[in-house]
Length: 136
Image (cartoon, rainbow, N blue to C red; front, side):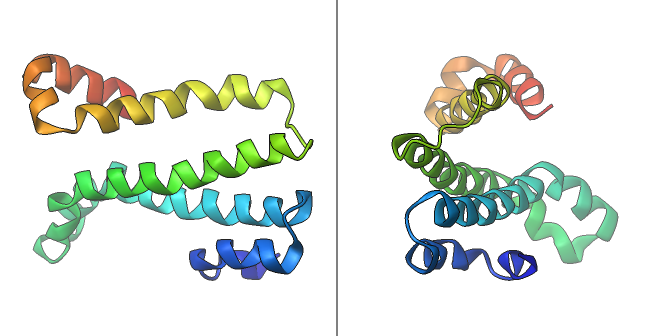
């Protein structure tokens, strides 16, 4: 199992190796979750990390939105794998959905309002509140 985190690109390769059943999907879910978390962490903590490290890490601050959108895209793959897991009859317990669905909805609300035109319509103050509450 330790090699699953070696390269996130292995997620797609796990399904052909282990099959599209519960085992292969489980491996792909683990990899997609870890890769998504890495992108989330860069989006969430990149600005602070850039302050800590200095100008050499300024790209983290400049590309925070890009990392956030990349996280949302990678997480969509993870969500689709959960849907597949349900489709093949290996549905997780209801508590998993109660815990994870609201944050997933918040992620895609942020994605929608990351479009500059919609941010302007929302207003600076409401956008700041939405972003702060959602990221917290």
